[in-house]
Length: 111
Length: 109
Image (tube, each protein chain N blue to C red):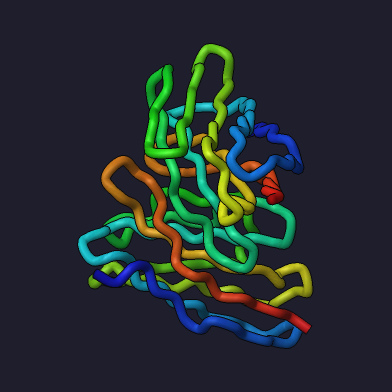
C-alpha cells in the first residue's frame, strides 16, 4: 500500500506569490492534517480535515487555507507568500488511534 | 494552551540505554505520541500512550503519567541508526497534535 504522498517535493517561489501544495492520504484514511516545520523546530499544526470538513485550525494567518476533496486528497494554499513561509510542509493522514502518518513533505523556499 | 519541554540534545554510546524525558501542559489532553525524525526526512510514528504506565514495543518503550504531565521514551540496545530527533507530541481534542522542539540524540560508536 502506498503511504501518504505529497507534491511537489521542492518548490521555489517569490515573495507575494501564491502556492498550492497537494497531498493524498493512505488508502482508507479519511482525515488529513497539514503541518509546517521550520529548521530546528517540531511540526506546527495548520489544519485538520475530516470527511471534507475542517476539524481544527492552528494559529496561522488567513493567508493559509486548505480543502479536502471527495477522494480525501487535500490541498494547502498559501497566498501573499512571505520569506518566513519558507519551511517543510508536511501532510499527515490519521490512523486507528489517531496517530499521524506523515508524507515526505514539500520543501518551500520563498525568495 | 500548550507547553512542552524536552532536552535539546543527548548523547549516548552504541549498545547503551537512553531515556528522553518530556513534560507537558496541554489543555484537553487526550494521549501522547512519540515520533522519530531523521535529518531531512518526515517524522515517523513510534508510540502512543493514552493511559498511565509503560508501553513496550521492541527496543522502544514509552511511559506516561497524566497526573504529573510527564512522559519518557526509553531506547534500549542503541544502534547508530537511532541517531535522530525524537519528538514528544501530546494530543488534544480529536487528533490535534502539538509537537515539542524535539531532542536530538547522537549515538556514538
